Length: 391
Ligand code: FAD
Figure (spheres, rainbow, N blue to C red):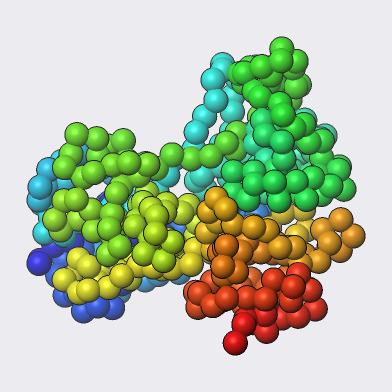
């Protein structure tokens, strides 16, 4: 193999290049990126950047030393075996890494809506977060909660409009309702069960016909894998790029990583597509190995974190229907608590922690180990999780 092309100059793309070189690939590498910026990290966009504590989050990677040809401002637009079509012409490849991430979903309407995916999005939104500005955030998911946190800190008058019964419902179900009080404590109005019909000049129109007046509307209702350009190619798509446990696509010599990849998880016996930083960081090592003909398997316990309303929220694992919840600490009286999801035979499937970092570190290892736990001890927040393992 002489030439590897990496499509998508985000974290997963850069890590793929580092991994290829670490695995000893001596050939040419070309990195194609639609944005005009050098690769940067996204988690700080809704935290340090919005709060005004950082202007740049460029990934700390020496692309020159890695001997990469960098093609920024160039988008991939089609794929045939051995040939990538881009906005700047065709490129032949021997190996291809798909790392195009995801794009935010937008709502209907004529009004301006801000989304938060790129550094340009973050800097444009930050300019509007001034004291007294009326900010409507659509969606109380991870991004919505972090934007509301930053907007409230900037002195804006913030309303979060959420269609579901509680925040974070898509990710953690009813447990997200324990975060409802955080909104009022931060001076943020949270409107639940409120579906947005359209974004209009001057604010939002809800399905109920009610209006939410706003100077700034931020839409945080999720993302879609950025794989439209692969439609009609030989790469199988189904909620992202379908890859096996080695991260290989249906087209030989092509692998996929990060937010755009839906991989087969041997551990959980299901397909997973995880839109979080740790996946973009770790998966490329397996993908590079697969591309170079090595036999690595990607089988992580997914992990992510969110910083919102002064709390560190962390999650590790994967929940499935039938798991039962065991609480550690009382969310109503104790600021620090965790929720564990146990399988029918008392193995830890997943854990959500609020300001209990030790629990998530130990919990992730316990999920990895697959050992059975004593549920009574799990419910006692004074017992370290690793001491809940049945011998
Ligand atoms: P991306 O970072 O999206 O990079 C993909 C790149 O590919 C983009 O630059 C895109 O422009 C480019 N591209 C797309 N299509 C094409 C094309 N056709 N041709 C060429 N280039 C293309 N995760 C956490 O775990 N914790 C957090 O606290 C957290 N906070 C976040 C906050 C924000 C505001 C955002 C947006 C994300 C956050 N995440 C967080 C998620 C995490 O940042 C992502 O999972 C990670 O960025 C995924 O990396 P990626 O390289 O797969 O995709």
